[in-house]
Length: 218
Image (cartoon, rainbow, N blue to C red):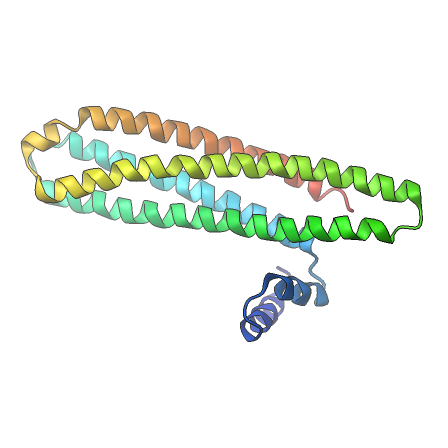
């Protein structure tokens, strides 16, 4: 956003009028921030959230690996660290979902507006050019949000595995249980690897979308 003053103004308006998205976007446009700029900002924020989630899920996997490799030392310390990694992973996953929802919200508002404004053209050729660009942009956006959602969906199986392990270890923290973690760790390594690959693909697609999006206009 352009300045803290502008952001605070927009938040104030939203707070006063109940947080309606259309009111929020109208308030931003009144101070010179169009929906296309909001969309670009939110896509960048979703990229940042995915990068942070990638690092966090890798950290959680590393902690489970450390626990499985423990030679019988302070198991409680390892368990506490794994529990903390789970909490942080939950928070990062929640942030990714929120960022994707925010992207969807402004994108739908933008595309709806763009569609309505096609009727305002008096030039048939310009109307068709704008309609073609809308179609192309919407198709690129649909691919982007599909990849973002696919990466987000992959987080839940990983979180499920971590939750199960933390819950089970809470009441079964002993050398025998730790010795049985090998298969779980192997499965989790596969799941985290797939998750990271999907997130990196999503992030690359966002880079490509933004490169085209910020270089054109509707």
